[in-house]
Length: 319
Image 1 (tube, rainbow, N blue to C red):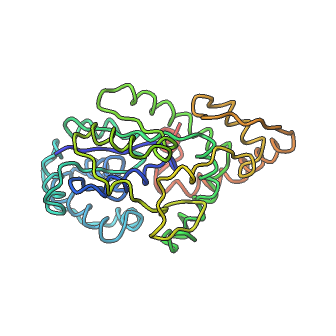
Image 2: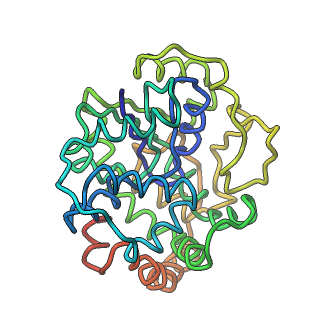
């Protein structure tokens, strides 16, 4: 069985491509498990990394969702057992029970980008799928990400809602993207990594999906092209809406972000810009971005502490 780890910046299309893969009869596409950036390191740190505990975590996440699992992780009871250094067979057995025809497991946690050391240690011959997207589109999506609560029925807790709300500072996101960009470029050079440009997926879905299937050595299935708008931070969706369409693509962001934010993004990461917009940055616009950064960032950091444990851990992981 192959293990495919989807990674990339937040709001770069990792969920969308995972939904495409979930339509394949021989792929088991998981929810965001945070298996190798949180679950496995935690179990290893308390000497409880074994098949029973891995299955317990997976069952809990599938039943209650990752956010509820993260909230209760510290109070869970674990089975004693020796360290399991090759998790491949254990995970293969778990997902085969879910989908007997499964040949590829797709795990879509974007943070897999920062967990490569853990993945490579515990999984033999992993595959990586990197999602790229125009940095301006990422910023625009991050800015309105809190609207997911309105779009998906309010599944986020208040704590996560406010963490997302205060993390939408353009300057903060540009700073965080520095390490993301570095890790993406390094990983893209590896032979076991495949990169998809989000915009290309919407423009030429059939061609891109066919190339992806070739990478994972599976025949392409027509059903993979039929996914809806679920997860969009801009529009409400219905189950009938199909998202793999160039009409859903926008390359003009000055109205959503403002001229100063677009100018700054284009200057900071020109290699992640598909088309430059002619904009007129202003001193006032720059000051507003700076004020937003100074006001929002302390709250974003405070609300992120629970996930990382300390300011040092947060800085180490994200910068």
